Figure 1 (tube, rainbow, N blue to C red):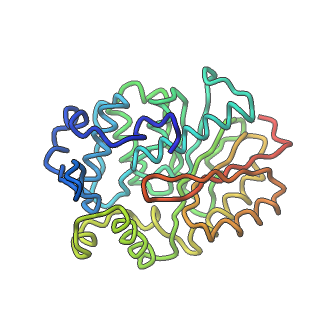
Figure 2 (cartoon, helix red, strand yellow; figure 1 turned 90 degrees about the horizontal axis):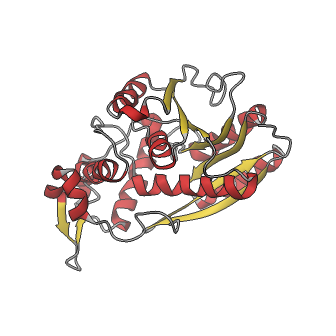
Length: 295
C-alpha cells in the first residue's frame, strides 16, 4: 500500500463508528480476538466504506442500492495516490496545480471521482454506460454541496466506445483511470470473488457469501475479460493522446500482463507497471503515455 495511504494500518473501527453508527453491529472478533468485520457480508463492507467516506472525506451522506459494486475506499485511494506521484515525477505537475481527471466506467459508486475531488481537490469527470448508475452517482454527489462544482458524471450512450463521446473536442485531462470488468462470465466472477473472501479470512459459509454477492454484470464481467477490455482501452487511447497526459488501468490477473504489454508496444506507448498489494489481494496498475502528447 502507498506509504501515504491513511489506511496503512488496521482500521480504527471505534473512530469510524462515531461517524456512521450502523457500522457497530457488523463488528466481530477475528481468531486473534481483534475487532474486524465479516468481509463476506456485503452490508458490512458497505457500512465500513460508508463510514470511511463520512469520517475522512467530509461527505454529507452516501448511499448505494443493493446489487451495485461496493467501493473499497483504501484501494481506490491507493490508485489515485500513485497517479498523483506519477504526474508529479514524470510530468512535473505541482500538487497545487488544478488537475483534471477522467474515470472510465465510474459506476454507481462514482468512487474515483469522489476521492479525487475530496482528497486531492481535483476536478473529475466520470463516464458510465448504465443510465441508472449515472443517476445514483449524481444523487450522491448532490448530497455534498462542494462536490457539485468538482464532479460531472456523463452517460456514455455508445457502449462500443470508451473515450469517444466522453471526451469533448477541446477538453484536456491530466489523467484517466479505469477499473475494468475483470472476468469473462458471472460464473468466473463468483469463483474469483469467493476465493478472495476465503483469502481475506471471511467467516461466512459459501451459501452466505452467494446470498450477499453484489455487483452488476457490466461492473464485473464482459466478453474477453480484462485483457480484451484493456486492449480496447489502449487502442482507443491512441486517438486521444493529445488530450490526455496519462492513461491508466487496474489489472487484476498476472497472466493478463503479457498481452497488455504487447498491445502497448503495438500502440507505440511508453508504459510502466506498478505492483500493488492490499492485504492478501495483489494486482497492479498499468500506466501509459505517448511522447507526442501535447496536453
